[in-house]
Amino acid sequence: MLRNNGMLNLPNILTLCRIACVPVIVILLLDDSRQMGFWAALVFSVAAITDWVDGYLARKWEIVTVMGKFLDPLADKLIVMAAMIMLIPLQRIPAWAVFLIIARETLVTGLRSVASSEGIIIAASNLGKYKTIFQMVAIIGLLLHYDYYWLLGLRWELFHVNMHFVGTIFFYVSFALTMWSGGDYLYKFFRVLTR
Image (cartoon, rainbow, N blue to C red; front, side, top):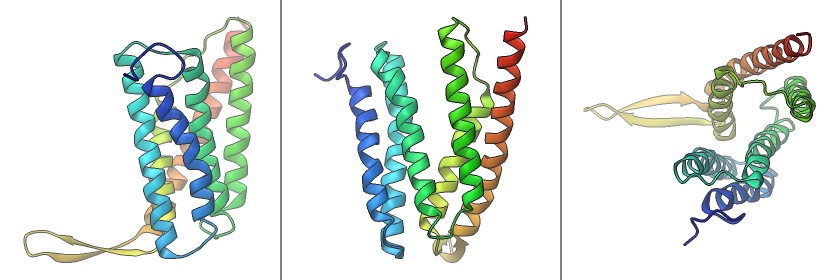
């Protein structure tokens, strides 16, 4: 059984599968068609679900490993950044915002490394969790991009949704949360250092 305390336990395998989804999404987004956007959104959604599942299983089975602690946040950043970067030439997301998000992630990762090397633990806030949720929904909406029609209600009425608009709204909320959580982390980092 895959449930073991070694490096190749089920949570770590799910994390590796999430990393393997990165080139698939990149290749799918080389084509700007509705079909490729749908498949990219599907692959991204499955990867996002495995992010929750691998963390849940690791905690439930008490098999949190050093490899998992390293790979899990790396996988999250790789898949989100790959999708965002590929959305830039499709003109679905502004390059300046992606640059600031990458800069924020790099800065916070660097500060975490410095804090860890000094034996300092800075607790993550709930802002990071909300940021991730909004980011995932935003990217799925921007990958789908086109208008979709859904059958709703007892009378099966058609409901029109512009996925690009939905994705854009969620993206700017996630952008604000990203900057806010980055500022919050900087504040906590320097407050701990000046004690």
